[in-house]
Image: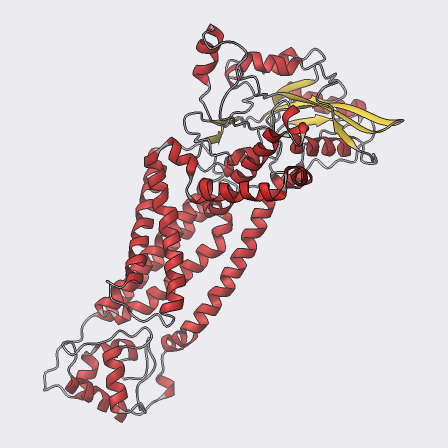
Length: 614
């Protein structure tokens, strides 16, 4: 294996910005785009003052937050560990900008160039390689690495503060340097912001003072092998689905025709009542009717109008005379509690009220987990560092920007609309189909709380079925795109994507099957598939915060934070945001500076300032 990395020795960096200039020359970045920055950090007050120069670049993390946050699969990780952004796939959403805790991804609506547009350098070398309004970042000079060369910043550094190589090769330059410094200076390398859990590849060496630094990884990402476990779960669910289908088909097989004139028991056995309430009226999927105490008129009314999951039975399917014979058989049969099957006991547990209570608890657990996941992303995005500047900018103005972004960028997916109307429509099949199911379920709870069977022409049924069909079409398109497109995500996201798609697809399919069985009167099929449907819904709820479904609330939030940061930068209320070499990263640069000072001198206490202009 190859794990390319860069080590930066802070005792050697003199803040000359040779790395910054060489990076711009190699990559031809616009005037306000810096892949390699050097933070001039001043800490403390006279006479206890420290100054340290901290070079910052893309950390090419082992578990990149930008890759997980990108809704367009534009960010991928190469086998050697280099993380890149596909300029053609990027839709300019902006979620990755906030997702990166280091502020190393840049997205500008318009580029500012050093030279006139007609100059050959700009028109022939730079612009053909950089698309407009797409995310950009340090590539670790992948074009040079592929030729066996070192990144431009490494070559240009006059003090050899940057050491580049393969961490998995004990004989590489970087591995030997780490070992030598451990022996000579007793220094261990540390990583920036390990609490963010991205496991950055870039290493830093601090001052010669004794350090108390933990270099361990913060949190583990999804191993590629988990994709196999997700696939195994889906296979198990499909096998269970086939087993239920086979079992119920056998149970639904018609009984042989009687050889004598039908009596009450024969009529009962041949009726749909027996399919639900048992061949001997001792119960089945429905309650036992043996020894029923219902009066005849109430019994007839229930048959004609339905009750709970029991559909209404019209006269053309069962005459009044047959209902009377069935009633007589049920009334005359003595109830034997020992013969009540387990299926009825399960049905009693799964009443409408209890199912509603159960899913209320499941929904609450899912919401709590989703909030926990969202708070982790918000913290990773550096909102804590951004918050002190909101007072100067104005809380009301900040709230309006966030709400507007959540609506335009989140609900309406404005960035995708600008880039591709077709992709927007395909994405809309899923997001609006899923929204339709949520709305329909809420309306069902209000207007049809007992979940009585409604005609297909009822508005609620139209909404449910149309939303479900939209969702299935969207899932089908995404699965087709996964099959046809090249996905280079090294197992970081694909396993979770398929888990979400498979659970969602099976949930919709079983929902349609339960509805079909109700209208066809296939009573034996209803309960097992309804229970399977509920299990799938529960699994979907409980896994949603950790699958691709998390994009539904994570991506809009990250984009809103990006828009808010851009507005603060443009407003000029906080000059650090505009003075940052890559404008808009001031709060993240401050966080990095604080982390570095704590790493190189844990006992140091004092104010930290970034000096953008000496």
